[in-house]
Image (tube, rainbow over the protein chains, first blue to last red):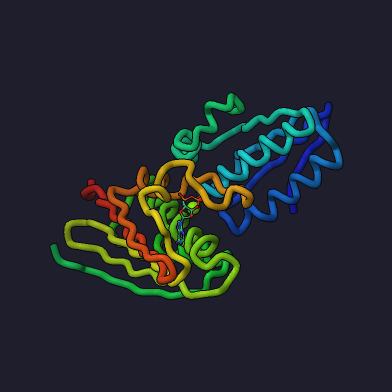
Length: 100
Length: 144
Ligand SMILES: Nc1ncnc2c1ncn2[C@@H]1O[C@H](COP(=O)(O)OP(=O)(O)OP(=O)(O)O)[C@@H](O)[C@H]1O
Ligand SMILES: [Mg+2]
C-alpha cells in the first residue's frame, strides 16, 4: 500500500493523493514499520503526487522526524507541490531544515 | 445580503467522512466559480473542523456531525460545522497555535491556525458536555 524505494541506506516514501487524518494513520504505521525494519540513515518523503494535505499531514511529518531521529537518521521532505506551500510554511516544518 | 443557496448535511463521525465532507463542500461552492486556491482553502478548513469533531469531539465514540452552508449574493460562503461531543473548556487556549490535547496521537495543534489563515473569519462556540460549533466565513473574489 506504500510505494517505497530503498537504496544507499536511504528510504524514500512516495506519498500520493489526499493526506488527511483518515489516511495518515495507515501511512504512519506503514512508514514506521519500514523504519524499524531497515533502520535507514535517511528517510525521504516525496510529496510529488500529494494533491491535498491538512494538519494531519503536518503531524505525520513531525512524527516521522522524531521516529527517524530516534534511530539516528534524518528526514528530508522533497518535491513539495506549490499548492501545499502555504500549509507547510504555516506549520513551521521549514524551520526544521528538512525541506529540499 | 441575501442567501442565494443553502444546504444541510449530517453524517457519522467516521474518518472516511473527512474526504466526503471535502467533496460535498467543493461541489456546493462551485457555483461561485472559485479559484483553485480559494477552493483548496475552503476544503482544508472544513477538513480541519470535521476532523476535530471526529477525533476530539467524539473521541472514539460515534456521533453525528452537521454541516450547514450558505452562499450569499455578495459571494460570501458561510459554513457551520457542528458536533454534540465533549466540547471545549477554554476556547481561546484551544485556538492557540501548537496547543493540542492529543499530542500522543501525533496531532500538531495547528487545526485552528490553519482555519484562521485559510478563511476570513473563524468563530467557535462550545460548551463542555454539549458540543462545538465552528463557523467559517470566506469572501470569494468577484468574477474576472
Ligand atoms: N470539536 C471539538 N471538540 C472538542 N475539542 C476540540 C474540538 N475542536 C478542537 N478541540 C480542542 O482544541 C484543540 C486544538 O485544536 P486544533 O485543531 O487547533 O489542534 P489539534 O486538533 O489538536 O491538532 P491538529 O489539528 O494539528 O491535528 C484540540 O487539541 C482539542 O483539545
Ligand atoms: Mg485539529
